[in-house]
Image 1 (tube, rainbow, N blue to C red):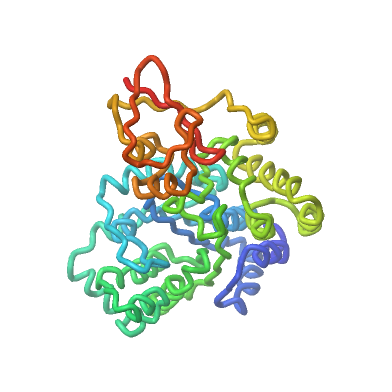
Image 2 (tube, rainbow, N blue to C red):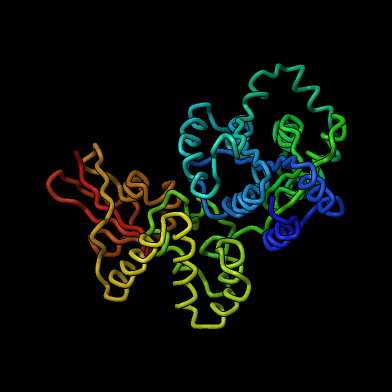
Length: 399
């Protein structure tokens, strides 16, 4: 194993809070001396089909632990996803079906594998339906007895709802207990998560102590904001997915505000502190180019990053359309514009489509449109070009 101090320096770069920090160095030293790797847990719920760069921050820290000889324990939360994490929600999250979860999680390992080495000898992958799927009602009651309603209602998001006279449902209060129980089942030494997950990570420590285990070290990472400055989320359309093409990644990153760049350099690149400082001291356009190239190189390789940068210059600096516009084939020949934008995959919902139309971001065959009920006629012989902003384009035809 590499010296513990080198890993600690990486941990400092990627974390905002460490619970149990006073024991962490001793754990690293003992792990190295005993040649017994620490079990580093990270869980992700397949609530959407995309894993995005915001998720990638703790996954990159997980990879750092892996590179230093420790064992990542990756939990695909196909059980907890059925409930839905209420973190950051001011309303109840709609429940997902078994089919929804299966569809969303189908490509998760492939996407995460662009960062983490998923070789079974180097990474343990678990699905928490392994234990939650076998629980009966009385097992669930036993799990519920691990905490109190008063303790669970200390969560900030639940507090806000109660202050606004909004409902907090009993099943939502089970989520922290389920995440904490994951830590017991895999005997985690360290758990990683975004800084909005701190309450849930604490629950893991509490439940491990009750189970007679050593309480895990909790490490939270800062939240990587989306391209518009809000929390990165597919719901907001401000995310950069790990499964996105290099050109799409480059364009989205180039739309990032200047103020957002320092955090992106810190959390999403492989640059040293000195290299980051040099980039940020220069022109913002050049800094974003280096930022985008570094991120794309990690996922798609250096050639793809260079090609994406060249395509961006061609498309936007010269105001030309790219040659590789995606194509979508639909069964309908006549579709309302708001529905068409959703069916073509440019937005995730018709409500998002209406917001884009209202904001003047939508073009049909290069002409701005704002009417969500505009009837768009499709044919099999010629494509209709749909465009949102400068980066999202698709040619649509009917079958």
